[in-house]
Length: 315
Image (cartoon, rainbow, N blue to C red; front, side, top):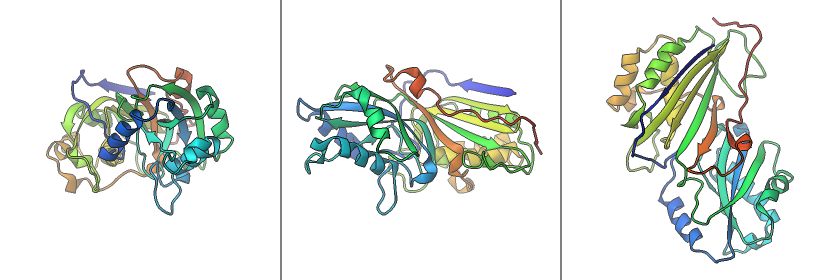
């Protein structure tokens, strides 16, 4: 097993963007929610979901989303929220893309109903599909926000680097079997990104963010047999950033791109040279951090199990 972990020095810079960026509409909703009636309560939820079943977190017309599914379940339990002037509205720490999983997504909503916070997980899980599980809930101040109160998001990407396909790994990993990945080179490339930088080379088209700066706080590359795990922690992530980074890192690991070449691409904002995005199924929103812990650690901290194979089969 090889574990390579690097951390950036503390930075005063902070970004509130995430895997898909959050815009001013969410911030306006925060202001209106915080000034609502005195009997309103804000409930924070920690949830897990299998991203393959959804078009992503965010509401989409004609496609099932995690947000819509969760809001419908909340509304079925909280009749006051069915008032046309107070529809259920959830806000998430990160708007994950279609097919991306979550082990520790955090969202909040407001209610004036009587259900205590600790009863929401069991009540919601009885109405949600098996592809979404609420693992914890807590009542938080009306000024607390799942997205804007967060100090970091951490993502994990898992690569299956064995020659033989594996049915049980396929839904959760990217199978790269042509050659053995050089995890040391991948770690070296990733470590150069630590700190506050302009990462526009790793931002998909369609972002509404006014800039592409964010602070990468910590990175880790770890091999256990045929499984290579990459983790990235940042104040926020640009639209599509992690999957674009992973596409380039795999090119480094396979010797198609040098560490220096990787660095030049993002430092020179050469977006046109960043062509391949890693597929979504290998990516998981691992956890979201806040100045003060909202949930018990066993519920929100690194809830995705690490995979292992008994017999290595690396190329």
